[in-house]
Length: 391
Image 1: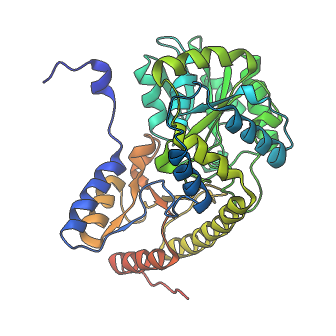
Image 2 (image 1 turned 60 degrees about the vertical axis):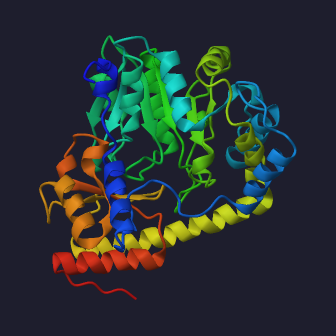
């Protein structure tokens, strides 16, 4: 049919998912495919978390919960903020969501009316603009570069803000670049948005996955900001579809109404499982995984730079490298398909993350083993006819 809503027809595909679909076809044909495309940790859910989920099912914890989540999980997250950031957050300000995606959809629904716009960095996570499109608001994408560490600045906000701007979304660490904002930068951005009487929303999904220094939460400098977080990345619970929003107290009742109507409640089983995510034994395992990610990052950075790719901003967190491949192609989308079909490598083309020089960039996800990263580097060495020295 051709009469689907204009809204639905304008939602763009996630290009890496098309590549992953083709990769699965090739695997079924017996091809050896190595994926560095999806933003999903290869580690399984931590054992205590998985056991807590099973125990919840056995105990009959399978009914609806309050729309904002079970109080025990709200309290556990509040305690986590106290331990990790020395921040005292009232548990009732924490809204448990069906993944960070639900959190973003609810927050954007709360903060924008039709035709309002939100300022977003380009490159940035591709689904953000789609959430805005669904609710008839707009993304105003701002080109960022290596000079800005691929992050929005107060100057960007001052230049781009207009009468229809409702607020700003930033991410630290960011997808696809892995770059972070300092506490001073967060404070500057907050002051700029506050001066314009707008809203500041901060994606903190990759907190915990940082490698030189810990990430600062925007709540350290702005208690009125909206924070989006998830159990998917650091906690390794992607398929459980569970996240949270830390919201100003005055926004919670409105978010609750949205949650009631859109989602009823988050997954009961996932919430009970997530209580074990904060167990000391689980946190020790997650820290071990973090240092494994660092080792992968360091290997991949060294290997790609040796092959002639340019990494214009060193990733400080998350598990991505956003790589300038202009030495080898002026069409990274086609290049990514060639790497898949000819070399059995899945990586993500820059076009997934915006229009800002996207034909030059590729994202590598180091969510696979050291062994497979070395295999990818060797395959690239052969394709590009570039020397490579790996230990």
